[in-house]
Length: 458
Image (tube, rainbow, N blue to C red; front, side, top):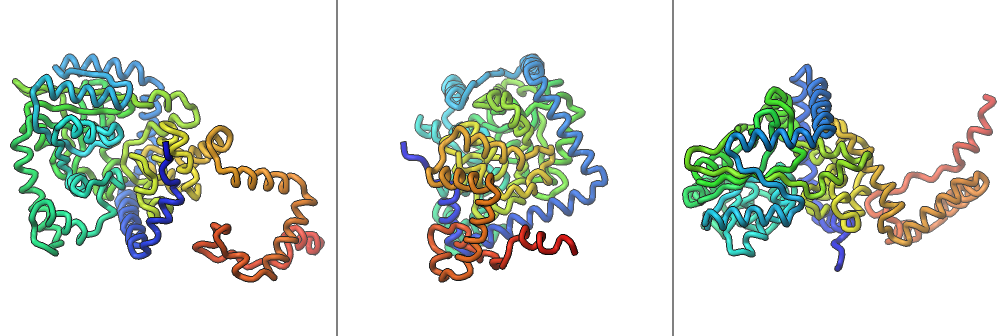
């Protein structure tokens, strides 16, 4: 099987469009700035982050018992609870539910888990029309793309491009790109889909072990519209999305939207506890590699993630390379930790797509040590995973040089001399990755060691 492009190669493709890459960078940084502004208005912001992190620590340390409690209470509420060990089993559960209830038309609100499981393609291959009702998700569904961001799935597209997509699929006026006009067209289109649907699929932001209920957070109300009109509600939840008590929910709701988009709270925080009379509610609890990640001491904290996307909005690599360059359901820094755990060979380049600046860890609302975990993955990959032969030889050579002081001094003198007299074409070529987009620093006449030895008595 041919492996996909490395992150570096895919990023290079995106960077060829200089105007778009700068626009993408500026747009995401604007969202990051909004996050900072709203966080500064909360005096206890850091205390909230610490409390959320501690709650999630408790969840991960007691996940088995909390899942049993959650299942027991959910069943007592009349919810049918199903378990899925992987994506295939999850998709088969959904298909069986649709077949048993003779569902032909369904709507779906944004769910990162169903993207992870490839549910849309699975159901479409079985003859179902799956309609994503989140505006951003519907846009990229029309465009036959996957989300490039977990909160703003169509952030890579400009207004004109969205206008062209809507003109093609919804018959809007050619060249129209007014957001209000396009949103109204989408609203009218989706309204018919909501009315016709017999089943609604949603994700889950938080499952509450104490009550057996769960919460879905949206800004457009599309999850509510779908679940209120349809006879069948299928909720798909990763097993790590638990919180112990209803009282804990307020901590996370104060952090989630502020971290994601800079707003004080999501417009709709919908609580589901039991099916309505004569309706059915199913809850699918999905593992799909999560227990394996839980068993990795260095990486278990990644399961605290509440999918706010803050680490993506701040990451200098993600902002300049786009979500598509990661070739994973969850891109950006947190995805670069989660994805290698799913398929190390496929995603071996992602932990290296980072400056290790720590900005991702600084903004994470649940205080995941993201940059430290990226560094840990690099060590694992270098030791066990696939690596380019040229990179291995270069690292071995570098290790030899740095372990021998005299050799290090000699190589330093040779490098300073050769760089000062070499023609530009010899230094800036296809072998010098650093020099593709930046100038090398000015070559010093002597090393710091030489300078120090001459001046230490002064």
